[in-house]
Length: 404
Image (cartoon, rainbow, N blue to C red):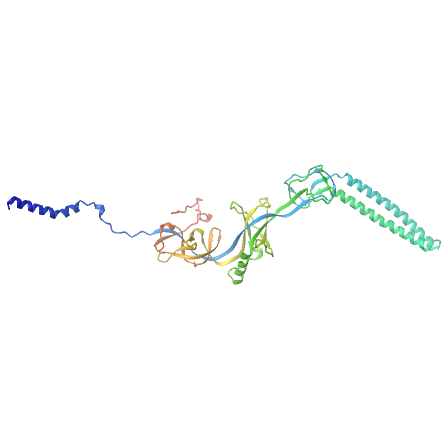
């Protein structure tokens, strides 16, 4: 082997040995795997569960009804000559609504008075005759029968006066009925007849309708099953009764606004509707501004009892699992989140009443659910309800709750 060939072979061996080293130098630095870093704790908003006495409020559908309703009708026959009210205005009891032509009743009254005068004249004559016969009878100048007939004629004349006085009173009453007056205070509706209409006595024709609107009623219904559950809760001591004079009833309109004046519960009907299985309740409300009108649909909130150790959580804190059950995320003392199954009752003022699954002092997540999974460790901050006026800062600027 020559010296040149030996050098070439050695150089080739040297390149072969350096090849892996050179190849490693050409790899990018990004290919180096970084050591995994620990996930930082996410921040979630929580509330601390508290047991406290809360009124159990039921929200039930209802309708507004007037306190009193009077259909105005005529008591005498005649032709209406005047309408004395403006439709839709407020009237007082005794105010004139219609006038019927009074002339026939005036003539009837005059005739009754004339008959009374005739009866009084006949009585005077009969009284004098009876006195004369009585004197002759004492002298035995007339028979006993003649004296009895004179006394009977006097009494008949006296009875005739009483009858004629009744006729005068009736005629005067009919004349008074010719002026049709409001029987109650309230709002008078549309005029259902006009001038020139002939009204017959004892006719069912309605001339107008008056409704008393202050105070006003709200009639609402509740299922008998709810009442039975409520009764059992009182018997077992789960709820305490509210005194009848302390029960408050409120109204909620279609748009969700609340009627500002509080009403009182009047009664709960003692029978069940056979078609609906409902019982009827009635509340009475002041209505000075006539905001409540008959026939309006409302929702009635009524306090029916007090839960002395109720647990209520914000509505958004309760989640639904795949089976439709309710659950909440509880933050344990070590900061880890666990899923807790609960049983819920009614929703009231944006709060779920929790009947089973929670106890006082536990912290549950209200906001930030998408930041963690069950078992993660989280950092907690106190949740503030942005809808509460008490959460506004002193300068009046509304705080903004950060939502992830």
